[in-house]
Length: 310
Image (cartoon, rainbow, N blue to C red):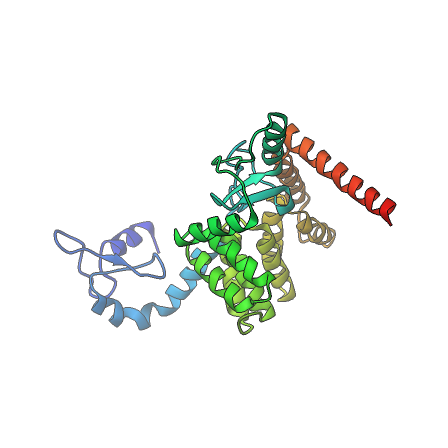
């Protein structure tokens, strides 16, 4: 179909042919961008003729969205130093008072400042005094009442760790509805394992895709594994490349294997490895390296002390 014909169709109702003029307004098909209608009746009458083309175009649009490289991983940037947060959740912490995820470098630097200055411990972001675990639970409850998706997701995690996957499912569902990417990923795990809900591969893939679109590298990698198991190597490779470019180490190995088998070009592999390293390097800073070294020494000292006690 020529561009001229497409332009004409976009200005006319696909069912009755009436043009969009004056008070006649056309609306797009809810699933694709191929046709427009002047009324619900016209859309209903045209459904049988448009069904196949609509389904194909909707799938194309979904893939365009799904295989778009996210600007960053789903954690985003540390709100204090404004550097990208690491994929490794052990290198950051979520503060219950404001639901902000802060990198270990900023958190450690704040603690050192407070200890050296003999100051009261406060949240490194909003400066709310840090008290007991009970107070932290109350703060999270207040955030949940405010429909904070991060706090809601964390509450779901807490319930799952307590052995209540049903309650966890409720919180994850609510958090995902509010746009929390991690909640989508956790829901995919529940549907995969049948925890708190019946196993459902369709819903598992849906939530994996939503998480992947939001920049969740592990979800992206899992989609690659699923496509690989289904024999869709080309789609699997696309997912692995995107995950690797987000800094996910786990996707490097399958890409190397597919490179040997000829499914990945030398140029694509090289650009992916460069992007992977750049994503990892972007999460590093002197402050974060200092925190990493501190916690490494602390861990070693703890192990040494435990051995002596035994």
